[in-house]
Image (tube, rainbow, N blue to C red; front, side, top):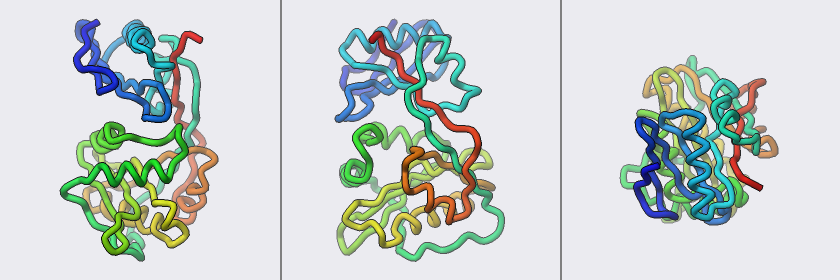
Length: 235
């Protein structure tokens, strides 16, 4: 195993042609988040063993559809969390946001991370590396922001693949909830995705997240399939 980087910073793990990337899950949960670039089940097991050996409590996968989880299960990763999956087509005109939403050119990740930590429970918080990873998950992505005077009140990370848009992350600071900011960010994300060629929009969220009602009210349908986060540990 060849490892580049210094923990708790991001790591690149290689063995022959196999490659994976790891980062801390977040500052609150002492797990590692592992992303497989290419490799076998044996390589995934070796990555898990290496990361446990440097002191992490467990190694978690990205959210995976069932069709992609077999390799991880073979490697000894076990079901850990489930995420509901929502989808909406982008045919026709999309509703306009009721708040001003800006597309951020120079990204102030410190303020975005602050909102993320305030909006999500510890297990689901993203640090700056995780937020950048969400931005890099699609070929084209953008950070959308809302403001109240000089304060950033909410953000969305939205990206597009070939024909689908993905709402990777959306959060509103608790000081500004119940003002329709989240709805405006969802609408602005749909409009951005459609302008960049997306014919549909997908997102995922925790099953107990009240935002599910917002998504349904904006035309999203909850899909039968869920995404699964898998976890590797020796306990």
